[in-house]
Length: 217
Length: 217
DNA sequence: ACACTATTCCAAGGATGATTGGAGAACTAT
DNA sequence: ATAGTTCTCCAATCATCCTTGGAATAGTGT
Image (tube, each protein chain N blue to C red):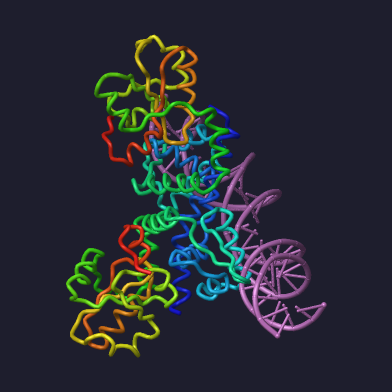
């Protein structure tokens, strides 16, 4: 039956990646990091974790080589080690959503009532024909780290104050981080409550990158 | 910043799948299950785990809905819940191999000296032209659960005794479970030590299925 | 009913992981 | 040098997971 110790050692190595993905907090951090590089402090704040806790989780991700760091002065920026990591993260979420009924429940509880969605192809077509205004409702720094060409940065917390910027008779398409990001849902709800015609991209920037569609910086 | 509790709940749900993949033993079980349905007893023996330990790990996989069970008399058969699970498993191993130097070390220690490999396309071409004998060196029950069309079942422990079955002047291509299965490596080493011309499929049945190539039963 | 097989459940120990505050390290600025 | 910023390391506590043997459950065969 082969060398059992060597086989165990190999599979334990594979499990290092699994272990890195075995915490909701770390998946949340990965979700943020997938949007562009971020400092420990920024990640801790965005994820609602204590600084040392966030740092510990980031070390775990780093030891699994899923993320890499870059130092700039006293700050340390974390970013994904590669697109394969984003693909693995996205596939994990898809499998979880397809297999676990509880994921669907939790998703609906978090994202709220479902709003009209458009596919990536529809979005591209609407941008080309000028039939829609595409807005990126993520925080400004994530927009700066890469966004859909032609999209305007309108962070969700500025949206209510900036309605005048786009014509009232034109459709708005909002997008954010990915399939499980609440920002575009909130944006569409806010816009439709204002009488606008608004939809959201069915997924988000994560899936856009993985589809190898053009990204503007 | 949205509903933190609901967000945590959602990501904790995603993490259930990560947790299921966070143990070398469970990944080893998944690797076996991916070859076709197996009973608890068979899985425990193949993986070198105690029966209750194997059962406990299988329950963990089942609670993450990565595997499903079927009862037949007193036996319970475990099988993968779907191809998406196989794809996730394969991607996890690929990412681990690409990212973690220790995986490469452990892989080389387990698989032994590298032997000549052929791609899936080359194998298909050789089968069509009749230029090679393709042998499936997995245990017979895995062959029975699905194999490459045209392949002959020659479990590794029978290989030495069955050399006479295939012509000495024809090339042999061996394959087994997947990219990290030792059986085809051992087969090629055994055959070349006997003066045969032998290569192995670069990956194995797992990747063959994922590529949606034809499977015979 | 009874014995037998295959598997799961339960309980307890040890091992591993998460979280926290405080100290230390790396770097910048004065 | 000194003080300030950002992050990591350390140590302690608590929670969770792994493993194991023994008991319980589900089903088969006599």
